[in-house]
Image (cartoon, rainbow, N blue to C red; front, top):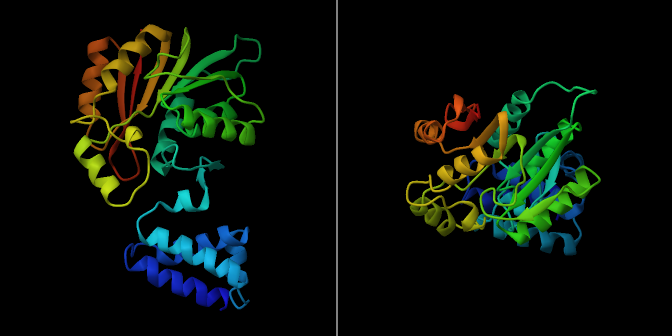
Length: 282
């Protein structure tokens, strides 16, 4: 079987369940099997595919057709210009989460070679995509990370070493309990999917960790504790930036306001959905 025939076969199998991008998924899975880039696969379409590789590829295609996320099958996901290792220990980085990184970077003061080093913390860090991206963009900043999952932090450590060359300080803790103030910036991507929807997502074959999705009956369970702990940790003028669900902007804004945060903003993603809530500690 040629690579072209294999991609066509995989596209048909995946397309029956996920018609949005079956050719893309199939070609990326084949690239993962062959250990090369997708562009290389497309260039080699007329070539034959060894039987061992074909069998491995068909196994991945079958898993994708059952609903397993593509990124878990390939083991990596691009985020903010970097390739992160991903597996079932943590959520897969989403493109819309890049807005959290961008807004956090804009909230920081300009680089000052002669000034004191800035301090930041990323809670609910998962794969580390948010905290690592910020640390990579601002080497003048001391970043620490935390997550309630020890397994997620092991994955995060691998990403730190691969992308930064060093392991950032990280601790196990719920919400921000592992953080140490005073801080200039706190970022967080807490679970914000409602419990019912989280169950539906898992029932559909998605194997992402339920605890990283489930934000309680209304999806807002973590925002009041987050605001309270961030208030205690932030220095005056420090910013809290958190990812939120599609229609949670006003609710999270009210939580921030009740805690005492000022300069409240809700940013929308490219699809027009509420995505990031920011507040400044006066």
